[in-house]
Image (cartoon, rainbow, N blue to C red; front, top):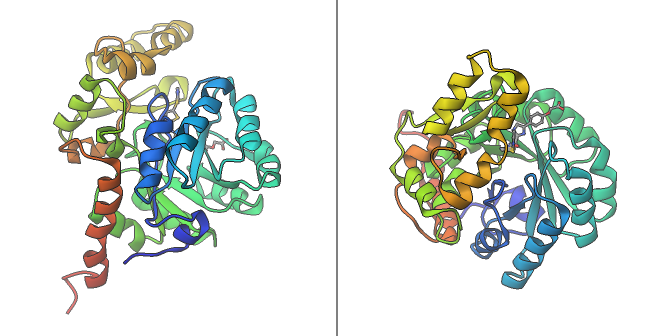
Length: 314
Ligand code: TUI
């Protein structure tokens, strides 16, 4: 049995968080993960506060277990969504794509545990000073918005830089990944892409099929020119976008190309105009299965690996 400080901190059986994927991680998926013994997380993405409140209520109707809300700090609605999280007194708030300093006091006053994604050592130290309960060290193997560092390097450096529990994310798909993360100093993991194939994940069937069929070189990073690099499946849209980045197109037109693209992937499965965010581990996803099976199996696979440490030492 694996039990870490993340389990007691969050009141969960398995130290597994489900990533806050915009337009994807809704109340239904979050509740399924929480019912399976992990921590389900509702993604606010770029959605307004009403959407987030309604998904929180959906999750509450489906589970009595703790769950969280992820706040994407670049969202135009970040302020109002931050207020909703405090009003609704969700157990946990995770943040991404920015610095959550200005919200920390209000969340802590509401009794919420705050777990920011940090993409650097400096940010890990700042969040430790401001009273975060743990940090998520997410490396560039992940889907969506990516930082500069890989998971292998970032998790080790962040574990050295803070006494808080560290949750590793980016490139983790199975028990081997969990064991590797623990070896680097993490005491929990967050997975996003792995949950795209969950039965309770309501994405367009085209999206799910693309994830299940993906191979090792099926993702790419675009968006560097505008300062927001994003990893997604190498679709017609992603290739066209990459070409446009180097075509001399002006920034505004380039920005316009991406507007609404996430939604077109998730809702319509539109390979021409949709942006199918996915991490490198898409290549390791092979079937659709219940979210609870994913949560349990990654930890059960990790147990014998960690017990045996490695087979190389005599
Ligand atoms: O946030 C994510 N993944 C995301 S957000 C997203 S929505 C989006 N839409 C359009 C453009 C870009 C994104 C899709 N996927 N992961 C967590 C994450 N946070 N990764 C990296 C960071 C991060 C980056 C910089 C966290 C903090 C940070 O600090 C910057 C600062 O202010 O110092």
